[in-house]
Image 1 (cartoon, rainbow, N blue to C red):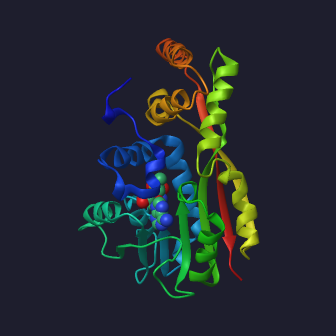
Image 2 (cartoon, helix red, strand yellow):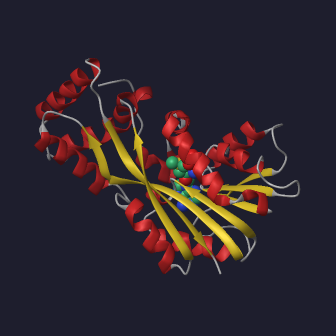
Image 3 (cartoon, helix red, strand yellow):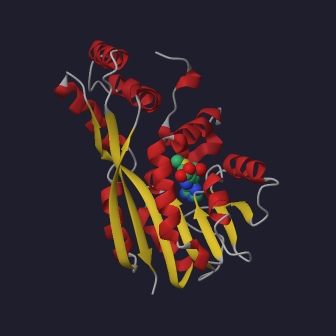
Length: 272
Ligand SMILES: C[S@@+](CC[C@H](N)C(=O)[O-])C[C@H]1O[C@@H](n2cnc3c(N)ncnc32)[C@H](O)[C@@H]1O
């Protein structure tokens, strides 16, 4: 097994401030955002947000604030972006990273379940990789609906863990492991549920686009160490089986054959 710094427990995003060391979580976000596929997703989100027509934008679950900065750069001169995140650590990091780059961004600590702004205060809301960390997704989408003005627009992106594929010679064990990861996650199917949840919250013109996002071996293993340990702990698989499975995947990777990825769902929706 690798050292603590080389893996991350994705479930810790539900309560970043409780993490003994938030550095691996911050690194996971930076690494994830840097991939060409996720850059493409980011560009498509910006396009769908139609920012040149907006004034007030909310980035809910803003993390490191990089998306807020990208959005601010596309707003008219009198536009502003507010990033809200439940984590003081994330808000401090976002504030530090934004210092000097764009005065039209501000970051504040707050819950997506009780967004600290009045009804109808924003023209746009972005919510990316947020719902997978919160059990009561409809309540969050209800908050997004509440804070948007009539004519406002929400754009969301969530991975669907149930779509993860990897090439591996041991298909039964691979199925067991991937199903375990999906079913033990807070919101393993949130990607495919997203358009229905937005419609049920009252949004109209809901469009959903599934986007395949390849991952590389390092990124996959970065997120898999904790679930693999848990699978052994829960006696779903034996330690030997898991070690053999990891070695086989490592061999494929070393031979240049690693293939893996998941589908994320990009949803845009209007409030009438
Ligand atoms: C995986 S990160 C995604 C951050 C950013 N949206 C991005 O795409 O890089 C999830 C973020 O949601 C925040 N978060 C988790 N639960 C939250 C809640 N109930 N309310 C607000 N933010 C929350 C976490 O602190 C974390 O910064």
